[in-house]
Image (cartoon, rainbow, N blue to C red; front, top):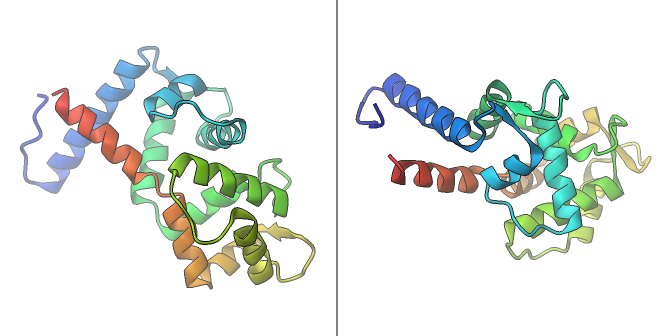
Length: 189
């Protein structure tokens, strides 16, 4: 039951889903994942205040019914987006994530806060400062120059700029965290 020895793709996906379900129910037997459990689940500890706020925003975007918890279906939707989502789906999610105040636009401060938080969590070094990167994004895709990125400006601008799309996709790539969790799950079977 705990072995994933099937070679057929559907068998592997079903087995993987079963492992994720077991991990989810082991971590939160109530079937509801709180924000605190979410951070523990993904191994996110000792975060700065801004990084914690970013993770809280991420949690909120996955909490589709806004009840303060992630149930298993919301969790599966989050995994699906991160692991299998297309560019359009991910960009929509990124926009929602960056629009911290829910105004329907991303201002420079929101973008800068998220960039700094992502960098703090990833722990990687970058050639360009967070401020310079945020300024570059606005210079390239704030087409009407109002200091805010509308959904349309964001979607079109990112998709039409290969470097921005690659950078955004790489910095928000959570597969390294999921790979670590999958390794732990396999070690426990």
